[in-house]
Image 1 (cartoon, rainbow, N blue to C red):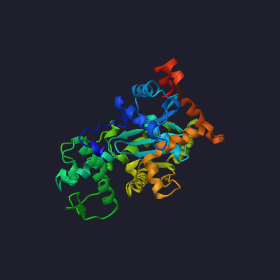
Image 2 (cartoon, one colour; image 1 turned 120 degrees about the vertical axis):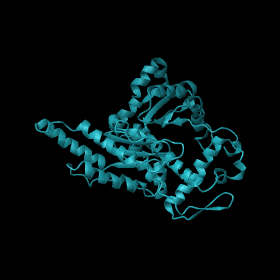
Image 3 (cartoon, one colour; image 1 turned 45 degrees about the vertical axis):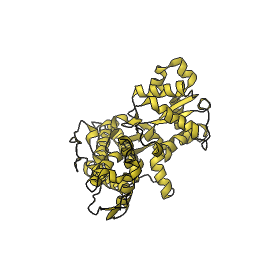
Length: 378
């Protein structure tokens, strides 16, 4: 890309969903052209599995199938829910998935491999939102062109934004969150004083904490979950899950049994909290979330005996591997799910049933079309 910096840089996704289907085909074709150590493979000979967000639209699912079957000619295609793949990656079928990516933060309760859609929420207060605050701070110290190497002075504006976001802001965030730095060196070898920097991650929890120029941040509203910060997003998910599962009347035996079952479900959910996504790798962020969650359960769910049972799912691997898991957990999880089709372990039976329902063959697509997509990829 750096060799073509005068060209426009375009996004393929918005709100975590594909919106540029004219160009996404090149992205998927690139995978087939390079997946085998940069040796191309024929897309018509290999199945394709793509992860999707729980709020993906029916129209998008149909468009994805059209690209897969009609353009790439794949024999089998599957759409797997991102949080479900992330959770299965950790060997769990029940848990609370908190995914903090670049463009979207989402909170998804999953029970026995089933996403609780009515209790799942997402917002745009994620890594890119933190980047805006970091950029605003750096712009208060120096001109924006000073942040770029001189060779990109005449590049397109979209490339400049891409380069600053992917390189300068990412580097500065890593430095400022892990070290107490006082000066930051620019590409022109000058230094700017950054000793008065703030903890930018706080903006994830309270989006209205610091104002951004020319950007309106709406006040949080109870009927608009996406307007809330991270902790409130988790609270809304848990509170709605409670109202969905908890019986209104706890006097009769049936209600008592439901109440006890709910207690066990909630306890299991909170003891399996998965914090994932590239932004979640920021130093101290997972611990902040867990501490907030413990305080939240003690304050708003005082009648349940599991306020102190909040536990984070931690992968049993090295620190570097954990970072890869946070960034690519959905991809790893989708691979794990696909491999379960050949697993003879009885524990994999539920996953096999789910996977059978997630795949569509090219022959079935050609025969049944959009109706099959709507039925399979609910």
